Image (cartoon, rainbow, N blue to C red):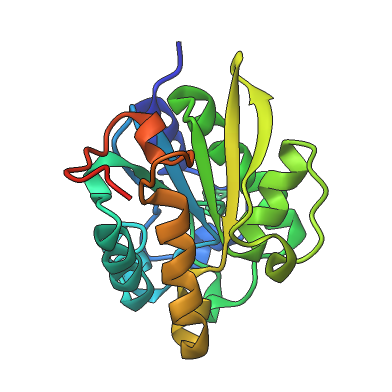
Length: 207
Ligand code: SF4
């Protein structure tokens, strides 16, 4: 059976698109191989390209901050991107690049089999909605909503949110973004939350 290491090894020698020529490092993804939740961004940026790690720049720090406020540690989840190499000057990935590199992401998801996939931004949401046969309109219409699909013999949740870099660029979205994460991940009696996913322990279950 394929492992995340097998896929990572393949990524690290990939030449399936031109981006391998301009990247400094491949960025396959990192985190818990048995994660219940996988966060999927668009593509590595400058810092990620330099370090070979996903979400380590300003957007990554903001994401860490938002996650820690709802009790999620990076090491509990798996974080990666649709593309494993940085597009020059952080341009949008082309549809061809998404199609060819997205296959690695799908294989990573097949290995992890998470209960929830959080799509960070439009490119990731568009790609994963397509893959799971959901209708994608635009990120502002679907962000913060929970979609349920059947996969890996269970129900899994697909949750699109804005890309953290977009929120840093438009600070007026910050409050709404943090509230979305609170709504999704903070436990309140009678509401379905990540308590169902087993790894977040809440000290206080009272309303
Ligand atoms: S972006 Fe993806 S498909 Fe293109 S070279 Fe990098 S790993 Fe390969």
